[in-house]
Image (cartoon, rainbow, N blue to C red; front, side):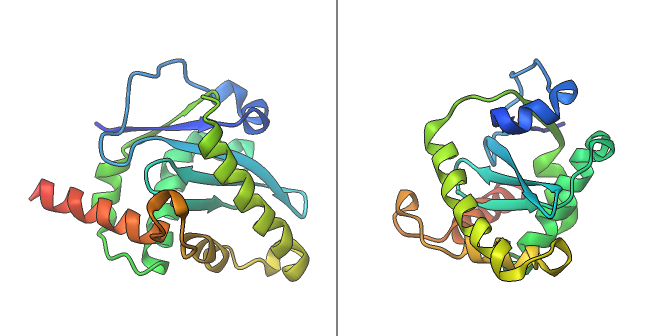
Length: 175
């Protein structure tokens, strides 16, 4: 079974410390590594997760400590819903197969990826003021906005285009 590694920033690592895995052997050969950081909206913990290969972003809203036992399911369902919202056609079963189980790891201090996360957090801070309270935040739409911005590191492609290419390549490889 596939395992997907999500490296945590120091900020997130402090809140999920007991769920951090020691094993760094399992690399997802299709989607690669992810990095997650923590941000707050109306005192609710939210995660901003970025895929290192595609710069595709995912927001997990209102993640509680009790949710961490089911983080794999939450991640897959949110990822699938965001892909659909972004216009990427895929079957949920394929997402389950690609992602497998989520493994939280302590920080890898990837400065490039952390810089991309910090840049996106600036946009989220602006949107917090625009939308106000947590219940008014359209997370799918905001996530779509982040994934619809051209990225210099991707030769000015959109992260959602890059993720679509990667998923289609996996689907063709599987057939």
